[in-house]
Image 1 (cartoon, rainbow, N blue to C red):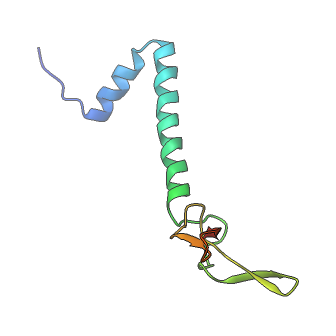
Image 2 (cartoon, rainbow, N blue to C red; image 1 turned 120 degrees about the horizontal axis):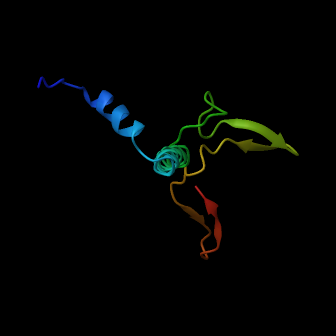
Length: 93
């Protein structure tokens, strides 16, 4: 009997074709969950911004009553706490 070499991708498709329907659904949902979680982690833990790609941290983007409003970067762009001399929390830097 002659053995036929199958590459890893062909073998994967052959195995996937013989799986039961519910196992396919569980596998696809698991892959979707992992990829979605990795994407959400990347977008919240990196300084990557989908909306503002040309702005840099510290750029004045607007003003309210002649007080400038600055661009702060992504969600997790925090360096340290900004506290007053008496220890009162003023916010995050």
